[in-house]
Image 1: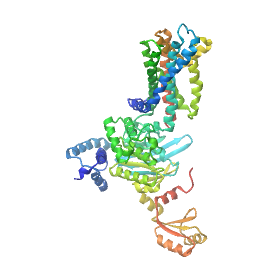
Image 2: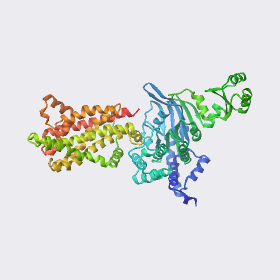
Image 3: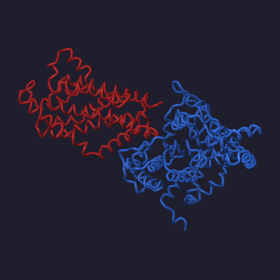
Image 4: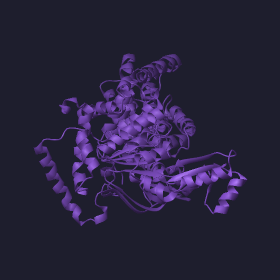
Length: 375
Length: 255
């Protein structure tokens, strides 16, 4: 009797999942176990005839794909030597990356690294200077409207319409996609519920808190049931409660099989949410990979931190151990943290604190992009 | 090439919805303005003026009041209001993230500016009828013509909005272009009182001159061949500024 307890939202999710299915089956003949489970959990399983219908559509969709290169099949975004040049600045410097279907892909980097510019080129609102960029299998130069109609965008700046209430914002936005009014009203109600904003339905935007505005922007980005969600700093300036709620919603969107691309300054956010990510600086991609792999590769398993004193520095130099300088603290990235810590405690007993902690993405980020301020 | 499809109406509709939400305050000016002007200028100052070219003074200025109202409503809608939507509210950015193109956003704004001019002309008409200063049924033509005139002023306004560095700089066209037009376009005194060169200048460069000329012919129900020239002038200028505004806005917003 599980199905009886499904809410409106669940059925909305279920629909979105099945709307996405043809594409996913096309790209992944054997979807990972995790996704298959979440799809079932997400909502009702369509009756058999409907599934057959899906299968048929799959076939139709697969045929024209065959001539494409093997590696690009199933990639939602394919960028090759992507270049964006402004008059006096190269904002994005010939980067190459692929975003796979169903994953959460992150862009990290200091201010001015080129993240937002890259997002804008993907959204077809900023023309590229060079290279190639395909989104959902279409060229961004020739298929802007088609791409935009299948994209959900959460911009960095809150650009909700202050002339309208939360609910009217969703309705007005739905008209830009040409969604019929009856359908739009239904989706708007469901999305307000999904983002826990029902109580604010008729409240003007100015009266909403920062967290509510961000949630409403995410709801707005979902109004056209997008296949790809682009989020530019989704939790910027929010308190921990609001951030956790948004993370939870983004994770449930991913569990339904949506592809998410996000930029963020918050490294814990990236570590939590992203399947894969790139770290950018000065318009170039420095590294690419899964957060855990990047940490292992560029920072090791653990970090020993110790106050910077003469004795410690001398001892470390004697031992020939590499260390990084972070203000008044020395950081030693190591796979044998206990040995290092024991050694250091002996050297500077009672004089300096020694801490051992697991390495994080923040360590990788700071090692790769340096500690100097950008703005 | 200008890329405009039926989606332009979703932009227009957004502004219409916002207008209706605050309809009370929006509906005041078209009722109050003609009453104030007619009382103060038409029947106050007008008592010292027997007639202009054989026309009673309130009847002479009535079409000018409609023309001015259309000019102001369309011009200010597509300067200050559009600038606020573009720059402060980021509404344009929000819309171009959808399948609506930048051309459609700008076109929708201008069509809305024209609509606003038409709404004002429509609301003024019963007031002018009440004062008995406009002829019927020819004066019904004020309404469709207000749309065309509104589109002209909306286009001119949008060009300024596209190149203005800040909202304050919009005061320049308002004071140096709109205000002189308000006074020297055959509005409150006939154009032929001005020196010949200035008359030619007004006909060549002040769009309101042509709008007032046509509106006056409509309210007096007395059309001449000059009106045809004015209509052609307005049609050409409207197309020109409509296209120019879109091109300038593209240059500003697509980076």
